[in-house]
Length: 196
Image (tube, rainbow, N blue to C red; front, side):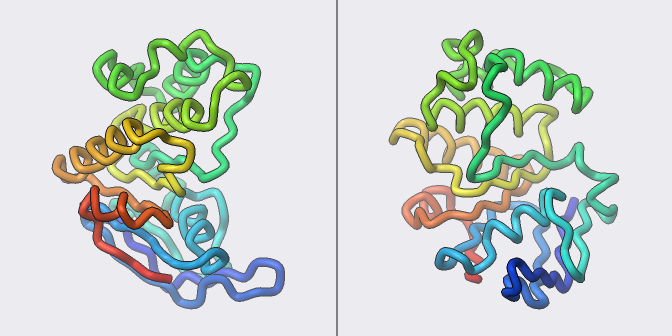
């Protein structure tokens, strides 16, 4: 599988955010780095299919995103699932929408999901919401993970768990695109770097 980003252009609020950006990812981990406002989140939102580019294209497995969404899991920086749902309800809803098996007990345990399952999203800490959203993104075992500032709100054990999961994801021949300011995390996951 391959992620191909070709000649992306995007203006936001009258400012050119992306100008001809291209990249190819055949597997492994790619960290997108740069100062605030340089286009990291815009790139990830376009790759995830949330935002349309002004010009250019994104293809996954040789197909347009609209036909390859099952191969992609996305956690935006401001991930805010419906607050009235419990974590269990969120995960069951995503599994039904993705037409995939529920979260495995093993993965759920690693993510710390069992004690959160009956809690409403609104009652969770930022780190707990991050874990729930990561669990939702991993449903269906997507080839590509798109994660925006994934360590925000996680405690040190959570950061270590995420680093291990991402290394395992890459070792299984899959890919992740990660926007972050956390250079220690980039080193921990052994990601290649793309500076915007």
